[in-house]
Image 1: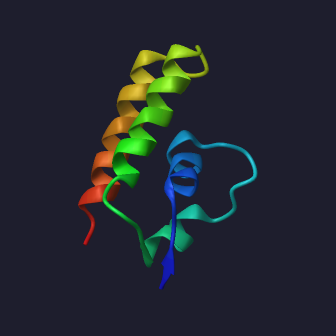
Image 2: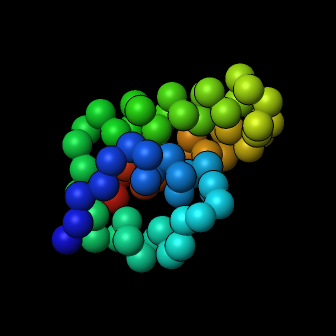
Length: 71
């Protein structure tokens, strides 16, 4: 088991370059509760900066929600 912070989760959700096999790493990871809020903020910032569109942001929020519900 490993611990992850919001930057790792955000890289996964946003699909940023340089991240290898995020699903394998996140599958057994633990984190603190506020990582969801911090990652959601990263998605919102990407939308505001024009890096992603509204439909893409919505899909990323849905993925984050699904990821956070895994136990």
